[in-house]
Amino acid sequence: MPEPAHDALKAELKRLIVDTLRMEDVRPEEIVDDAPLFGEGLGLDSVDALELVVALEKTYGIEIEDEEVGRTAFASIEALADFVRQKRPRP
Image 1: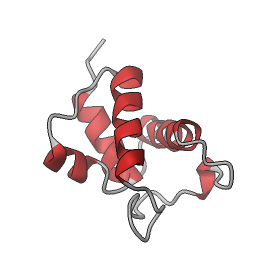
Image 2 (image 1 turned 135 degrees about the horizontal axis):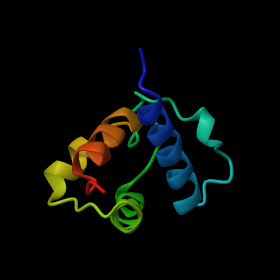
Image 3 (image 1 turned 45 degrees about the vertical axis):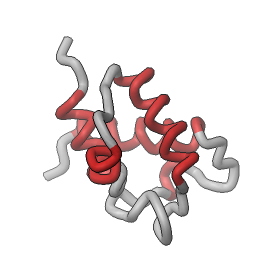
């Protein structure tokens, strides 16, 4: 059974991607949770990745240590939500 907080985080991340990258032709709810964000999935590129890293660090107070970590974290919305949930500072 999906966790409501996890679903809410995925929805937030979809909105963050659409807003940060000014994707006027994509609605957040159209982004599939387990689809690749780069390449044939959502079609993001390395410039998009840099913008998203900055937005994630600013919004969630997390640090993406290196390219390999980023590649894993940005595999899909599902992977990104798991990463943010693990790395986000606890209140």
